[in-house]
Amino acid sequence: MEEATERAAVTEEMETVAKHNRLACGQETVNEEPKRPRDGDEEELEMVADLAEWRINWVAWSSDCRNIEERTEVLSEPFSMDMGTASALQIFSVKVIELNMSRWPIDVFGFIAVRDSVDGYRNYIFERTRDNCQTLTAQDSSLVLTGPIRAVQLYDPITFEIELRVKGTRPSEDKPLSAQVFEYNCIAQSYRAGSLLNYLVSAPRSTLEFKYAHLCSALEARVEVWFSEGSTNFSVKFFARTASIDHQDVTLMDTKGARVALRDDGFIDLSRNIVVVEGHNGELIIGAHLRQVRGEEAAKIYREISFTPAINSGESHGTIDVGFCKMSVVVAWSPL
Image (cartoon, rainbow, N blue to C red; front, top):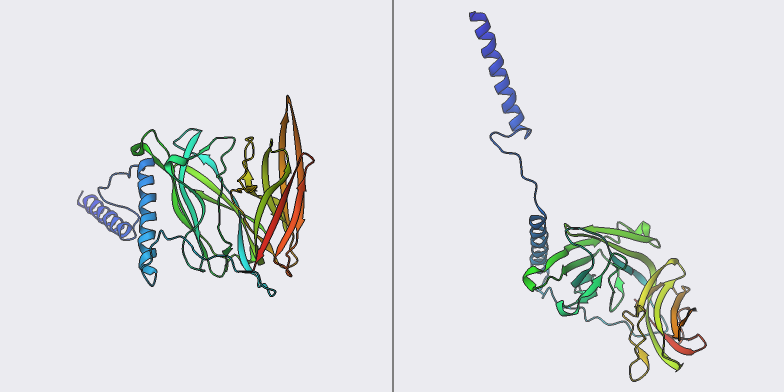
């Protein structure tokens, strides 16, 4: 009987020692209830707090305590006979590919900006106020990009800053769609230059898909279009693409079935007008999908023209002629 009691005591002591060892290794906790899964609201609050902390650190890291909301003021370099090239980022699109905790359609406002080492300030690619939301649907969930206002240069890693919200019936009911930062390390990822890249940004309420490309030895191209002659009774989608990545377009403007609007001077205000093209021998294609309604019939026409960098004059000129109208296109080339 005593021997059995002694064996039981030894066994209990061994189990106690083993338990202490597991605690020391972090394999077990004492008197701790199972963790409750976080709900979506808690994850959203954490996401917003992380973005706020990043911004505080950004200001602290900057040498002159700069304003984090400041916009880039660096303009395109003027044309010169010896146009230099540099690596730059072509941003094709940003799309909401997954929606959680909400139903389509959604009204989105806020901004997405890119920071490069040229000045470190925000170069906006999407920006809308609460009273000027973009409505996204399950069938059309791409953001209408309005930037960048200059080429995003890839001397060092760049940062995307995202703060998008879903509009509620009142401001107190607005919800964060995505509030994050992410980096594209152009140095570590240089082997992927010249390829179309996809990057997914997940948040409690959404998943965003960014499509972009790292182009080497690039020039900046500023596109302008104005109406020359003919009928203005048409809708249009303008796009640009480069010969090096000819399977992905940059949307410059899409009236989405509405009649095209002209300024008093005949210019058409494109949603965005900055693209980058690889090298002095690169090729830029500007295209237009037009739709003209005539009575009960609708004529659909597609035209495209190509440009190569004009290293002697700094500008390339072309005409989109669709029969019922003509539009002039000018591409101004700038070094990086």
